[in-house]
Amino acid sequence: MKSKLFVTLALTVANISLAYAVESAWPEKVHYRYQEVLGKEIFYRESGAGNAQTLVLLHGYPSSSHTYRELIPLLSGRYHVIAPDHIGSGFSAKPDPNGFTYSFDVLAEYVGGLLAELEITEYVLYMQDFGAPVGFRLMIENPMSIEAVIAQNANAYLEGIPLAKQHFFNTAQTDKSEQNLAKLYVFTGPDAVKHKQYLRDVQDRPEVMSPDTWIHDGHFLSTELERRIQVKLFQDYKTNLDSYPEWQAFLRERQPPMLIVWGERDPVFTANGARAYLTDLPNAELHLLDAGHFAVEERAVEIAQRITQFLGDSSLQGSINNQLKSNRQ
Image 1 (tube, rainbow, N blue to C red):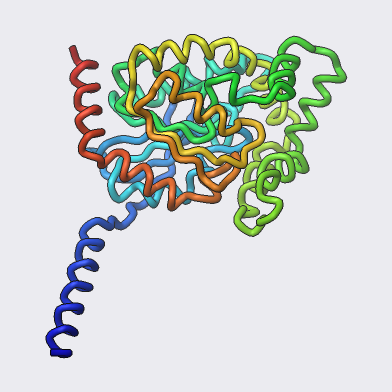
Image 2: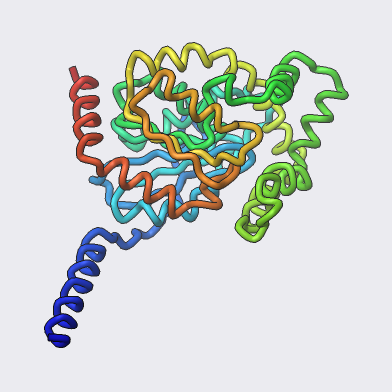
């Protein structure tokens, strides 16, 4: 009897293991590429089969596509993944801000241009921090391209930004005094990047945050020119707050399938901003994670699992198919 029970248990374990083996997917090689867009070199990371569903990952401040170095391999066995560096960030071109206009309109123009050059016409959009204003501009410019949206600490509601931070963004645009410019410039320095960005939300567990983060970003913010580029973007950020009503109206009208994976320890883009999406997208899937602003640095595996479940859900696939059918009409 014991022998039969052992065999039964062994077969059960084997079947479970097989099921997981079938579900698992080995990562594809990540490629590091450049593409000329509007006369400038744009760097992007690419992985996964070209005929698979495409995910476009948009990074925030102060990083680059480097922020997705753990997430990309977790997704690339199932999806085609593209993660660009915004113009002015990372390995992408950094035109002198004295002769080049840096704004979120321009960042979106270059990401859209990259996708056009790569002939990517339908994709799932993942956005974090600065990636949100870029992403919403892409959505509004070409809504037919969007299959689904994933928001990770990607704000689109004033409810998600404390008043002090709203004041920071507003005065960055309206106060052009030398004193305020100096304040913005300091915010782009190595100490601020390390302690006011990456370690700010993990002070009780700093071991979860790789030093690669602030060292990598610090390298690309090591010159006056590179830091002034980010200051220019801070000065333009108020345009995003002013655009929130338009973005919200877009969500209400289009009802794109949306996954919200949000680090609830984020004191700047708070969990209230995550919940606010449900006002306009009541069918959105919301997960508050035990993480901070850079949740993908802390919870890459959990986020990858949420994405895979979200995109693989049969009811969602029906929504995506309906969205694509609507887009093509």
